Length: 140
Image (cartoon, rainbow, N blue to C red):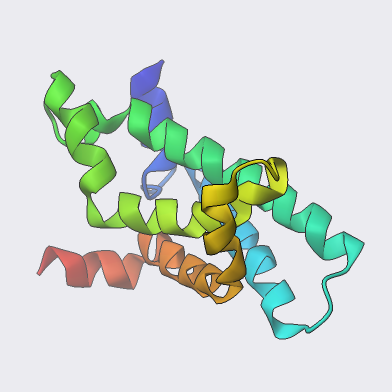
């Protein structure tokens, strides 16, 4: 089951329909999360979209974390410790943190990140994971 989840959350390979759908959903979520940055006023629609996208990003992060041992080809606990410090995991976390205070206003420490709303622009870097061109460059 976890191996199939790993195959789904990683960049789709030819013929894997579920993985391609997952990639499309993630790209759409990234684009939707960036659209409100173009507007000065924060509307109810933007707030709802931000909450939905936040839940999608958190689920993506958790799915990647629980399948980290497949990513690093090691069936050990060290994979789960190593993954959160990888470049893409840090980008995922930085993309999530500014919106976390939407779910709970009691997280005063994270209000600082909420003030830095522009850090949401970093969500664009999440697209790097889904770009075949960028994955080719990364291999070089």
